[in-house]
Structures are given as C-alpha cells and as structure tokens.
Length: 193
Image 1 (spheres, helix red, strand yellow):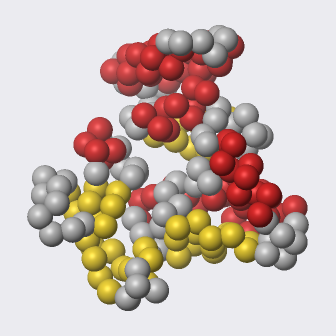
Image 2 (cartoon, helix red, strand yellow):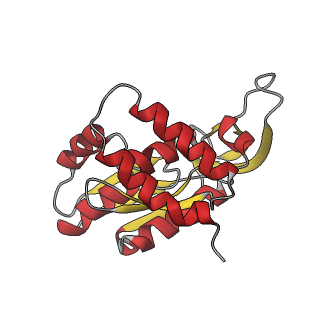
C-alpha cells in the first residue's frame, strides 16, 4: 500500500502553491518535503507545471522538489528560448538532464513542426528524460543523443556531484578534471563533437 506520506503529498503541494509568494514559502516547502521523505513518501512525484506540462521529479533533489512545490523552473528563460524556435527548425539542449528545458521546447516544437535534439550523457537522466517526454506525448519531436559535447570525440568520466549524495538516481553531473572533486563517484561517458 502507498505510504500515507505519499498519499498526503498532493494536498501539501496544493497548500504550498495556494500560499502567496512571500518570504519563507520556499523554506516551508523544503521542510515539509523533507518531513514527507523521512516519513517514507515515494521520492518520485509528478509535478504539474504552471506552463501546462508535467514532469516526473525526484523530491530528494532541491531543484526537483522546488519544481513540484512551485510549478515553475526557469519559466522566463524557457519562454525566451521558445521565441527562437522557427517553423521546421530545431533546438539543441546540451545537458538535457531529465527534461526541464527539453519538454517545454518539444511541446513548442510540436506546434510548429520543429525538432529538439537533447544531449544527455548520464544514462539514468536520459531514461527519466524519455519518461518525461512520453508523459507529455512529445517523444516523436525529440532526438536524444546519449553523449556529451567536446572539441574532440573521446571517453571521459562524469562526476556524480552533490545531487547523487542525496540517494537520488538522477541529477546534475559534470565532466571530471584531474585532481578535482576526487570524493564524488564517477561514471564513464562518451563525448562527441
């Protein structure tokens, strides 16, 4: 059976979203989210975004929980990017992560016969990206390339940064440099030109 914390989370999210955008609202959401996770709420949830699409998020990550409790992720920037799309054109999302930018771009591309090319080298991020595209019925407008970009094609290591220390399976990562951040776990990835 579903943990009570998972069942109550939609009510908590609705209550937080109903509050005026005042100082402390984000902190309250963070504290309630942490309490729900401690009470064994499923870390994954579907965030209904204010712009009309949905994303599967991992509430162990601050940025994902913020998306769930506010319904927004860089909305002004995404609206600006969408204005650059042209009928039949393409957008490139380098480091697509789980789709915070790719999904709304794909929805916009669908309306103008456009395309999105999403580059995401971390397999588990690419998997959740696919799920988010499918959730929004826009997978046919996106080509996912499971690689990073570089000036030369080669294998590299990706640092699984702070996000992964929360127990999350997805999150932000960066290409490893010798002697930097040695304590983070690493995975091998492909870089393409």
